[in-house]
Image (cartoon, rainbow, N blue to C red; front, top):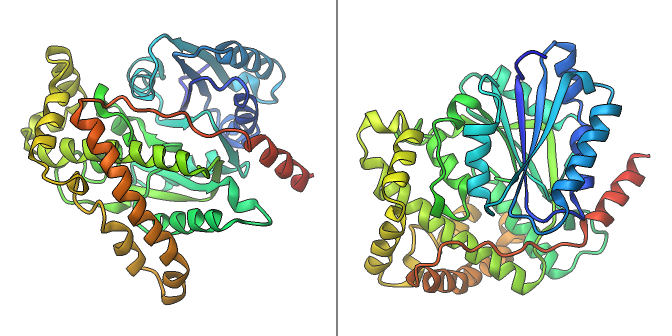
Length: 377
């Protein structure tokens, strides 16, 4: 088989129950036929990390079956890499820098708890980068599963309103699924203590060509007819935990991008992955010390990073009048939630805790998949 043009990395932690449906949505993609038609193979790698269930075995069984029965099986390869260390950060680094084909042109990064639809999604993301030479990353449309509910609760509508405001901003990168040019990805190394918001870190680097100029939002482009569904947080406890995680992550991204990396000499920024790898090997606690210093200088918990409380209302102001009215409850709820979650994040960071990965809510995606299958029939 020739060198893969596309390398797909699926990052999974204890997804025994749901990863079958997720991988099924991957193997139903037209990407495989489109690449085969052009004589360009691809590879699918699943990086299970710190799993305590049967996720690695389940994935291996699915890969074996697809390698045998898939119409384009001759044009792709599948591998499971079972990592003992838990964490998306380590799995991302291992996929990008160790496991993916060195000559692959495009790398897909995706979580194992999503469903990809329509069937053209992955190909459209690749094709978007093929046609847009100025873009470094292509993204799809993230869709909350609650959007398909016939009878939505008030909380559902607030949650969907928050998503609408987020989607109104330019250069949005959702870490659940994106396609990135390999040369850009391989100049990125995710620091061990980055915690959440790896997508925010990546976005800041690719949109500034590694901090060499101001933000160019066109480095990230949305592919047409491309989307995935994920299970939204709907319980108050789940939302609060997720927001705390996001606050911790965005604070660390602010520290890295705005107060450390932009001061590195250009020679290090153009070889950033090497610089950060060497920094972490020589001084494993360097980022923890930067975080501790930032927390000591931060007077109030709502000042963890610029725009923590105001960015929702700034995005609200960009919408037309009718959308502003519809999304105002979401902006107000987000403001109040930010006050509470930033306090919790501040308290955790003050204690030196950065490794905060709460378990995502589960249980509704199977029902969503059954409904989607029925509508497609």
